[in-house]
Image 1 (cartoon, each protein chain N blue to C red):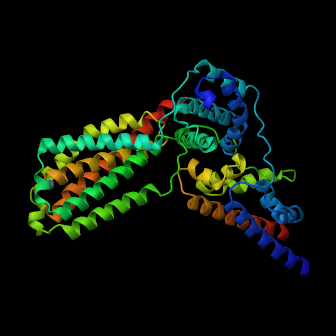
Image 2 (tube, chains in turn blue, brown):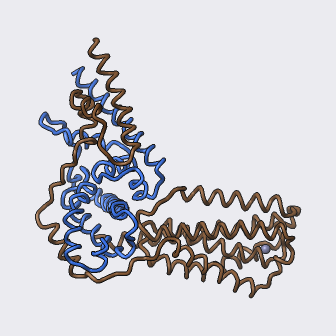
Image 3 (cartoon, rainbow over the protein chains, first blue to last red):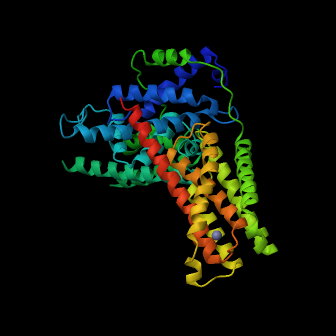
Length: 175
Length: 275
Ligand SMILES: [Zn+2]
């Protein structure tokens, strides 16, 4: 990161290679298409690039990166909901609607569906903990929050996931 | 039946173990938990994704190359921002400079009215608040900064502290006296807040503030606090009601104005980025 600040092109490439998959994992969601995610990732990189002078060598990199990624995602969401509300009258269904449960659906897809039922702030914490491998302290930095608040969100999210899963199990047993 | 009960017990233990795992900083999940998760269908479904290694996301072709090319095209050396302490000191200096100039301009009529206790306590409270706002501004300039205490708590604590100090240390007037002539103070207070607010915004914008609303409200708080300080030392009406309503009102209004301005800036930015 410091070499990137000094305009070392190799360092920039290295960062892009290492972080782009993480950003993709974090910014992709079942409600947006792949093209949307691609746009978000590119926009996020431009923001990182413009903000690179605010990174300090004494601080951890990931919270800095994901604080920016989080806001890119939030803005993307706001922009989409604005476009959607304008387009709703004139045309088309959303590109992806809720998928029916298929027998071959992978564990990840299924969990993804449950994740989508969580409040945005809880989902974000779970995704950051998992996809980015950040610690609670780092997630707190990335979300401008306190460690206590992050912990609480993660616990609430897991309680809800457990409940959702319990419900779907009960349903399957009956049918 | 027995197996079922045992599995349940194990699952609830697994839930607790996952909670504990989340509490700890990064690391390997405990062996017992991994073992249970691999053998229990319910927990596998719930936790294997969380505990397992992260599979790298499938990248569409060319995205990394495209990003690399864009970054290389505008790669120039940048100078990292100074530390939070230094940035905060800069904001405190701006605050002190404006406060000194404005009090000198309006005259220290308020300071002359206060007794030693009032003067010391009020100065300490205002300085502490200025330092906190300066730290908050400095942190907002840098994405991913530590935040130990939520911003709203700080604002609440300051408001309560100031109100308490004023209510206890300053004499109360009757209602008609409190309402009379106070608007002039609020009006001047708001005018005073604009130039230092603009200067602080200019410095804050050298960082990479993520939330314009939050930044707007904080700059508003800093500028309002500056006005409050100037009014406190220059206004000759040192009654508790007047100080709280008409001087305190400046802070409330400037925070609100900053928030609204930040919101408007956010809308403009969103519209601009619209494809
Ligand atoms: Zn006054």
